[in-house]
Amino acid sequence: MDSLLAIRARGITKCFGEVVALDGIDLDVTQGQIHGLVGPNGAGKTTLLGLLLGLAVADSGSLEILGTPVGRAFAAPDGVAGFVDGPGLYPSLTARQNLAALAALRGQDTKAAGIDDVLDQVGLTDVADDKARGFSLGMRQRLGLAAALLTKPRLLVLDEPSNGLDPAGKRHVHGVLTRLAAQGTGVVLSSHRMDDLEALCSEVTIIATGRVVFSGPLGKLAAENRELDYRLVTSDPQAARRLAADVPGIRTVDGVGARQGAEALVVRALVPDLDALVTRLVRADIALRELAPVVSPLEAAFLALTEQQEAGR
Image 1: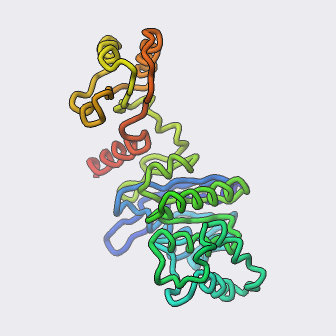
Image 2 (image 1 turned 120 degrees about the vertical axis):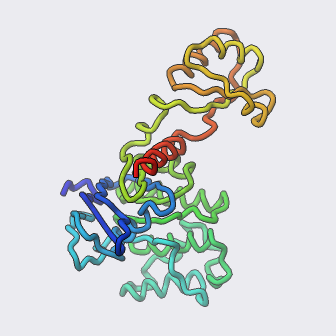
Image 3 (image 1 turned 90 degrees about the horizontal axis):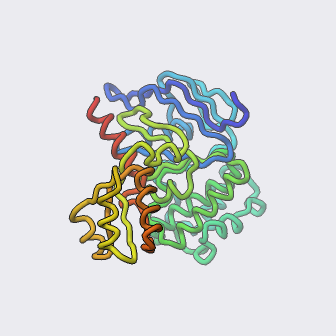
């Protein structure tokens, strides 16, 4: 195995009776990389995460995790941590007691386990002595992340860790994951939150109907070869609309601008054509105050690729 790979999967299949959950999955995750896993409900994401955490074994294919080939009697090797379908917690225990219990189960010295440090990392210091049964979904997610951090993981596998997070909680979680990756930990992050994936991930794998329909850098999903709708706010909306009508490859999306605000212009274009429009706006001394895709490139690619896969089943 390549020493830089935290995960190397080839041809992974997994069936539950007659249901094919995973169908020839290939996956590479580099150490020090946050890798996004995206797919519609029922695509096979949870099954794949379970395989990575040692909760199940593949029917066929090869899987290597942290340099260790995975066999039929697989248990997650040391250095792998995370959760699927939400973290398992003791509701009658406090946050600190939950972490102490988990540390004791692993044979760790609870005083030296760094419990206070991981609680601080995920922003739960102020509620460390509150019982978990009173925690919100977001707080439970953060406590689950704290539990994973106790193991000092080299591979972290997380299923929807941003569920229920408020802005402060999201900032804490993003900070933790970014620091872990910078220190060399591989992170697999499954989420339906495209903004989180675009903010955190260097690469992404899109799964539909148990198959990989895309895997690679986020840059490959940019709209260089795919039209997107873009919202433009300028100092002179009427002049901008007239210029847009004269640029080849630019189409005004009627009706969308009204919903976005009277001053907004929404156009459909490839990136090179959009660049040409921006150049003309600047030359005409029209200030460009805002330019953003109506739907993110990742979300647009996700919708297009998964719809194609569903249509070809």
